[in-house]
View 1 (tube, rainbow, N blue to C red):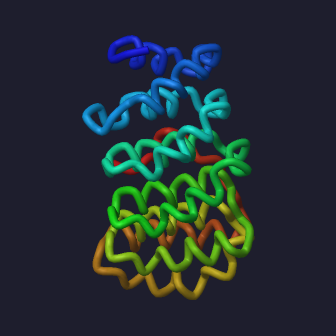
View 2: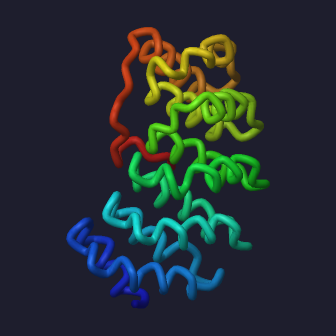
Length: 193
């Protein structure tokens, strides 16, 4: 599976599920010279791409940052079904040297509804990341978790005074959701730039 064909499979969305094994193989063979093309296609398949989860987790360790952040996006799109395969690798990706990778890892954990105490603590620490998108998306992810994110309330309150308006807005929304105990579904329209 190459180039245009990979893109077309992604455009088919979940209907392309029978192609996931071929896409996983292509992902493993895809070098850093074509960063993220196959992961982008897998992301569009959503939970149907679950069989490619282990391959996506391996790409989180690739040399090219763009491959790593596209893998994190695709892992997040697996939703809660991907938690078992992706939780530990996504937690590790939160320490990536590239801020874009960290940002997509926190967003992926939110999409997967990873609401255990360890992940909530990691997302709370991400509110202090030096990359503004990581801070904003950590707040968004905590908001998606709703009530289980209550331990993050003091840190979210601190982000209400962040230098970045986007971080302040996301912290405010997260606090409302947590206060109301609302967990929400993350949709494609909620992606980071």
